[in-house]
Image 1: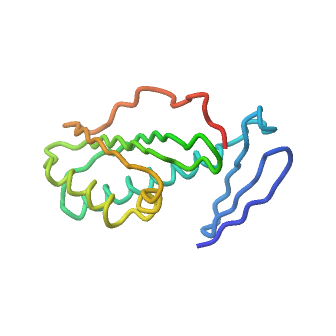
Image 2: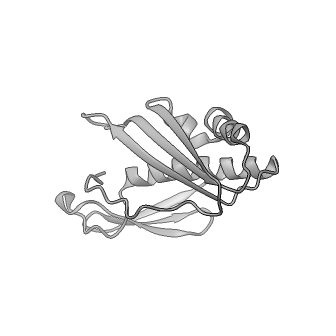
Amino acid sequence: MRARIKWTEGMSFVGETGSGHALVIDGAPEHGGRDLGPRPMELVLAGAAACTAFDVVLILKKARQPVADCVVEAEADRAAVEPKVFTRIRLAYTIAGRGLDPRQVERAVKLSKEKYCSATIMLARTAEIETTITIVDGDRVPLPGALTDGQASG
């Protein structure tokens, strides 16, 4: 796996992944950024949520469960002093599908957390990871709105 990050100006960077995708990473205005993209630690948290969501969907599909939608909301607390690692991560899984077996959903989340999701397994070395699961008997997970929290530094 590879990545390249190039500083552009201020606290803005352009990242390129080994798979050929590009993204803008930027700092908060109070740290010299222009708010042009996510902060590095937001990407770490989003990457962990995406990793476990990927696992859960794949495990449910392999178990022939009628999974129709999956949303993982992640929230993290950070240490008060540098290096400000994550100390606690809450992952709220909402899985939609008509007739999902709750035991299979719980099994998928557990397997992701304990065996397959390299991102959350790495983060578990510094952070307590809590999970909650909600199952929706339907085709979609309703989304409540924007995630802005005003605390997106570093």
